[in-house]
Length: 439
Ligand code: SAH
Ligand code: SF4
Ligand code: F3S
Figure 1: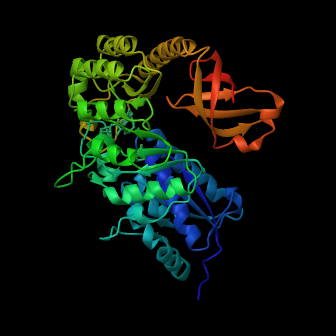
Figure 2: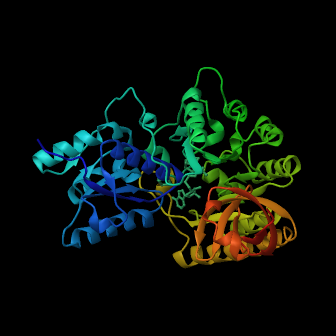
Figure 3: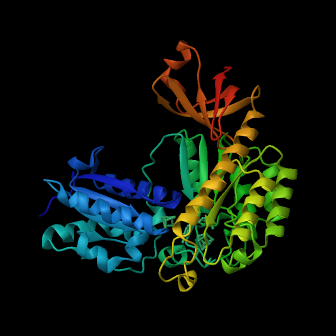
C-alpha cells in the first residue's frame, strides 16, 4: 500500500479571491487526509499551483515557476489546478505531474494515490459530482477574516474576459449552505466575512424562486452575532435600488463598494459587452453616494482595449475625476484566446497602454490622498490583522489599510490581532491611513 498521508505540501495561489478561497479548501481537504502544510516549498513533496488565466502575464508566471521548480535538486511533484487547469490542460499535463480541476477536489486523494502507483503524469477529467466542492471545509489562512464563496462562474461574457470559459457558467450556492458556513466561522471567533463571487449581485439568478442577493444579505444580517460583512465583486448592471437600500439599512454590511467600470467611454463599454453606459454608471455612483455617504469606492479598469482612442481614454480619465475612487485596479488589455475580443486587432501599442496606466495611477493617487486627508482627526474602527515590526496593521470598515502607531504598552500586547479597536487618524497616505488607538 502506498502511504501518501503525512506528505508535505505547499500551495502557490495566483489570481483573485476565488482562487484564494479555493486554496483554503484545498488545504482543508489535504489536512483532513493528514497532509502537512510546509512554509518553504523546498521542503514539500507536492507543490500545488492554483493558477489564473486572466492575463497572459499571469500564465507566464506559472510557466516560469514550473521551470524553476524543475531545476530544484530534490524537485517536488507539481500539481496544477485553478483556471489554467481547465484551459491549458494538454500543455500543462506535459509539464506537471498532475492537473486537476477544482470541482474534482473531492477526488484529489485518489488522484495522488493513482499517481504514486503508476508514476505517470495525470490529467483528471471533469466528472459529474452531485456534491459541490464547496462542501469541503476550508482551512482558512487567517483566524478572524474569512472569504465565503456564494457563487462560482460567470454568465456575462465581457468580450475581453476568459473567466466564463475557465470557470464555467454561474452557479449560486444554496442559501442554507452559505448561512451554515458563516455561522460556523462566527462560532470559531471570526470577526469579518467577505462574500465572494465573480458577480455577487446576480446571486440567485439561477434559482427558480428567491433568494436574490439583497435577500441573502438580509438573512445574513439576522445572524445574531456582531461581525463585519464585505462582498466582492458587484457588477454595475446588477446593482439594484433594493441592494443599495439593504446596505444602507444594515448594521453589519461595511461601506465599501467595489464596482468595476472597466472604461469610461460608451463605445468601448459596448465593445466590451458590459451592459451599461457611462451615464448609467455615473447615475448609479450618485445613488450610492447619496444613500451611503461614508462609503469608499473602488473599481477595475482596462486600458488599451482594441481600438480605444486617446479621446476615448480621456473619458475614463474624466470618469475618475467625477467619481473620485478610493482605489482602482488598473490593467493593460491582454488578448485572451477564445474570447470575442481576441478577434479584434490589439492595436494600442504596449507603450501607449503603459502611458495610460500611468496617467490613471497618478490621478488615482492624487484623489485617494485628498479623500484620506479628510479623515484626519476622525476616529474609525479598525480590525487588526497583523503586526509587522513595531506596528500593527488593520482594515477600516471602508477597507482602507491602517497603521497603528501607539505607545509601547499597546504594541507589546500581541492579543490585539483579530480585535476591532477605535483608532484616531493622524496621517493620510494615498492608499493608507495612520493613527493611534484610543481604547
Ligand atoms: N467579475 C469581475 C472581475 C473579474 S476579472 C468583474 O466583472 O469586474 C478581474 C479583472 O481583470 C477585471 O475586472 C478586468 O479589469 C481584468 N481583466 C479581465 N480580463 C482582462 C484582459 N483580457 N486584459 C486585461 N485585464 C483583464
Ligand atoms: Fe469577466 Fe465580465 Fe464575468 Fe467579470 S463579469 S468575470 S469581467 S465576464
Ligand atoms: Fe484569474 Fe480565474 Fe480569478 S482567471 S481572476 S483566478 S476567476
